[in-house]
Picture 1 (cartoon, rainbow, N blue to C red):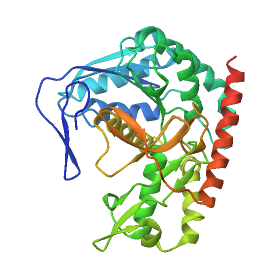
Picture 2 (picture 1 turned 45 degrees about the horizontal axis):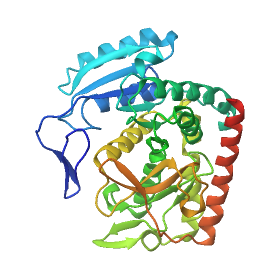
Picture 3 (picture 1 turned 135 degrees about the horizontal axis):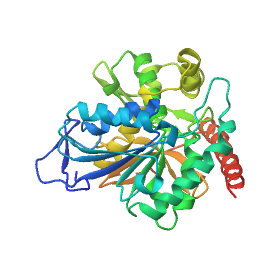
Length: 353
C-alpha cells in the first residue's frame, strides 16, 4: 500500500511497516496544543505513531495568546524527549504563522464542554473559531492539506471550516472525528464477547459525534473460539445490542466528564491519531473505519452534510463502503442523527452569517 510523501507502507499480517527510502518532511499543525487533548496528541505525532518512524515531522503548536507560556512548556518537553522523528517544534499564537504551508491539521482547540453543558451551548462560540480557521486555511495552507476536526461540535465545526476554506481547499479534505466512538464501540463488543480488540472489526458509527450517533454492529465481525462470527451471533443478546450498548457508546463522553470533571483526553487523542494514521497509510484489507466526512449522497444523507460513514482508505483517499443493508431499526436511528446534524448546520450558518 503506497502512502503519500514517499513512504511505502505494507500491511503484513495486520502490521504496518515502513521502508527506509528518503522521505519528505511533514508539517503538522495542532491547534489547542496547550490543552488536554493537544498535550496528549503531540507526543504521538512527534514519535512516529501517526506518520511512521521514518517520517521527519515539523510540529506546529497553536493556541490562544493567554496560553503562550503553556505552549512554550509543551515545546520544551517535546525537545527534551529527544525524538529522532521530530525535526522542529514551532510555537505560535498567530493564525498566519500556524497555518502556513501545513500538510495536516489537527483542529482541536475549541471552547471546552463542561459538566451539565449541552453541545448546542457550544455552537455559537465555536463556529466563529472555525470560520476564522477556515479562512486561515484558505489563505495560508497548502491546497492539499488534510484536516481532522476534534473540537466539538466536531461535525458542524468541520462543515463551517470547509465552507470558509472553499474553494482553495477541497471539501473532501475536511473530516471530523468519530473514531473515538468507533473505538468505544469496538471495545464494548470485545468486552461483551470476552475477546481481544483485534478480534472485533467493522463496527460502524453513523451520523454525529454526539448522543444521537448510531453505533451499529450489524455488519461487524467477531473472532470467537477460533471462528469468525457476525456480531449479533457472537454477542447473542439483541436486547443489549439495541439498548445498553448504544446508550453506553452515545453517553460515554458525558459519563467520563461526570467522573473526571474533565472531558475525554487520552482516548480522544488516541482516536485522532488513529484517524489520521489510517488516512495517511490506509485501512487494512477487508476492514473499514468510521470517519465524519462530507456526504456524497450515499445512504440518502444530504450531499455536503458532515456525517460519519464506514470508509475504506487507500492511497490517501477515503471511500464510503457501499451496499450495506439498513433495517428499519437502523434507518430510524440514522434519521434521528441526520436531523440533529441538519439543525446544527442551519444554526451554525446563522451564527456565522
